[in-house]
Picture 1 (cartoon, rainbow, N blue to C red):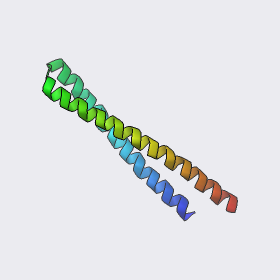
Picture 2 (cartoon, one colour):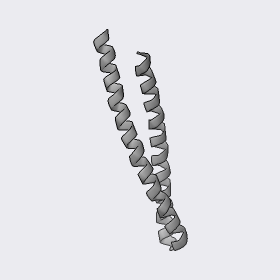
Picture 3 (cartoon, helix red, strand yellow):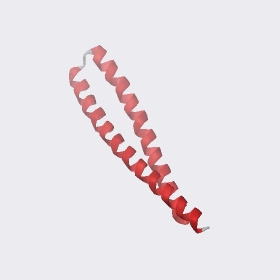
Picture 4 (tube, rainbow, N blue to C red):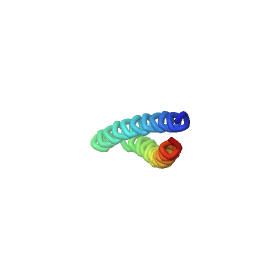
Length: 83
């Protein structure tokens, strides 16, 4: 059961990262729209690069979270079978 608890804790930490990054991405996208309306091309390009990086990082965190979910399920099933 200790392994299961550890896996769940790790998964919750990943979820926190995921939620933080999603909120930051949303904030940057709002700024992107403002810069577009102000036609601030230099700042816009820099922000768009940052947004692309965040989206890539978000995809990676999603992948990690999915793997962790599978591992948590396997661990839970092992605990359930051994009880």
